[in-house]
Each structure stands twice: as structure tokens, then as C-alpha cells.
Image (cartoon, rainbow, N blue to C red; front, top):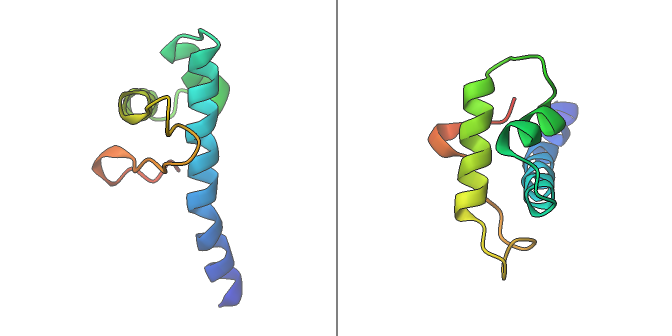
Length: 80
């Protein structure tokens, strides 16, 4: 049971890491499509949902709080 709790506690940190990576790639001038491929791969799995998540992260990020404010994904998306 402790293993499940540990795994669940790691998920928000992983999402924060992906949010930060999205911001960094955007700052480098990468397109949203390139960001989706770089962060989640080219498997095509849920591409539209991944694109919505990238757009949400970028829309809610501000330059003054980009590294310190966690971003909640839209519509209960878990990033899995």
C-alpha cells in the first residue's frame, strides 16, 4: 500500500516538470507541435489532448511566476 502512495505523490511533481519543460521549449522558439513531440513523443496517443495541455500551460504561465506556480491541467487531464 505504501508503494501506491509513493507513486501517487510523484505524479504532481512529474506534471510540474513537464510544465516547466513546455515553458523552456517555448522560450527556445519551438512550435507547439514540436513541444508535444519532444515532451510526450510521436506516438500519436491523445495528440489533441496534449496540444490542449501545451496551450493551457503557455496561456496560464507568466514570466514572473513561470518557475514557481504550479499549473493545473484543463478538464481534469492527468497527463497520463
